[in-house]
Length: 59
Image (cartoon, one colour):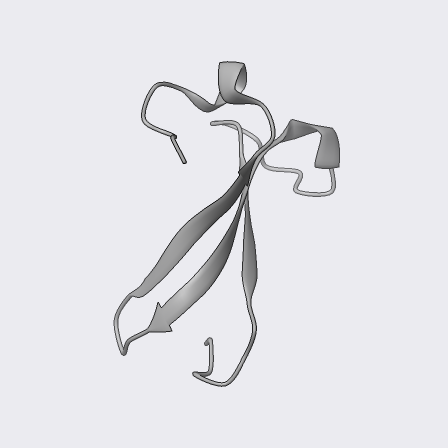
């Protein structure tokens, strides 16, 4: 659960990655900006590997 007062960041990985300790497989970083009961909204803050992220990931 993400609390409203928490400063939270998220990391996005290549599709299929199950070992999230593989930091070299990260494709983007994001910051959670709104927290709701059933969903949250995040802003992409940095794209690390566009070529591995797919066409839908843009700043």
